[in-house]
Length: 243
Image (cartoon, rainbow, N blue to C red; front, side, top):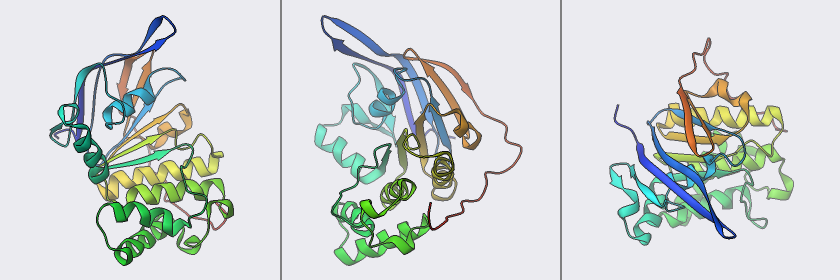
């Protein structure tokens, strides 16, 4: 199967005082549609920098990223921004929600930027929130939601655009174990049911059980690339009102 996204020889350095720290060291990477690829490693291993380079958020010093048949970093800045808007979804550990907006408004706002009318954006936002089990929380603001619910709003916001590439950077680190497992199952469903190439950065080994592929990175280099053998299918996503 042709990769949804592929990188070759990515390198990135950051200046610290008078010295440079090499965070990525000629990394090769690829990910496929319909799969959840887990990028795992300790803090400072380069995993978040890798995802930023793959998604058009951080320009690498050297190397190439081919995303959906486009040479990403050869595009002008404005076209990279448009590519992210049209084709990419993002989920972060800090949720990145607006305090004054309801769950419905959080998701609809992003959809309006894609060109949908206000009503169409609201309808599609409600559908996405219902899919992640928040149909009863459409008009709640972040302060009225639990941590797990906030992250599910962020997932709905990302999925509502029907992205072909979905990037998640430590999406469970601010959650307890139960909500963390729920979030990762939703990401797995995004790959299987929506056909997205899902790339998830984490240092939580409990999440490996839900991955189609696990890539370990340390000191800016890929250590191994594994496909875990699962005895059973991932557990169904069950939404509780208080999660």
